[in-house]
Image (cartoon, rainbow, N blue to C red; front, side, top):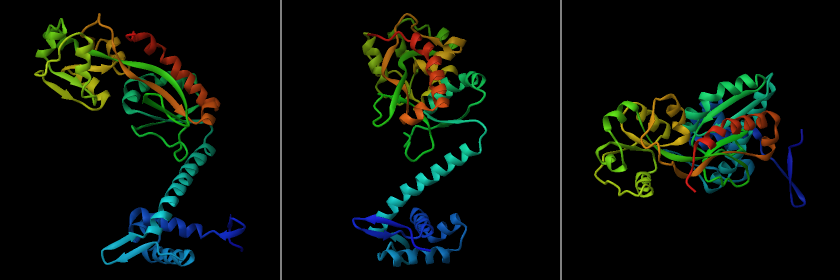
Length: 316
């Protein structure tokens, strides 16, 4: 059977064995023939033979072999980098297409920041499932940006500036900082003004200057001696406030349900929220945005977020 070929200029270049390329990519990723053999379910000798055959076919050395182990050559690094992207995309396409083929209902796959998923989306998700019984969802909570060319996702929900080059971007809602506390703590603290916060434990997330900016926006000086705790996960920050561990400067979107339920209270209810300067966005490839199941999810999310938009009276 003739080899597969690709064109280079006016001549055809034979493609190496796909199986040999897969074996090499696995060995390069693990930097070990033994671990590659375990992943592929073959012997270490088979891996070594495939790599050696590929080196002979390409006419270059891909690994430097020594008693201490394997190291990629310059040529090996170049091949490994390209093949890693190719096989990553192939695995993602395989997972996505097989998943779609085996389903009776369309699937919408969403990557979402964990804090917004836990505190806002998931508590409301049952409404979408009731309204759209013929659509399945797959939510993946992650802070990492999605590479839609390589990963099997339709949408991302992100918190930021809205600059996501090459993707369609739809704003869900702005966000703002609010000062919150558990009702029992608030009753004990008798906090009537910003100056009273000097005696309290102040909680904040991974924005280290947020309390200083809040004091400045409130027309008060910052109290450097006040006890402060950083809880980098914004959803955990809200939970700490609920449990009375301090007075928190929290994002409205993550605290609004707890404020509505009475598990948290606004420390300064007459004060306007301070804008964070960032917002929540739906992002994704244009083709995915147009798919009817994805469009239904987007419409539902933006509809649910109407209460977020109306609940924040951001300073102009």
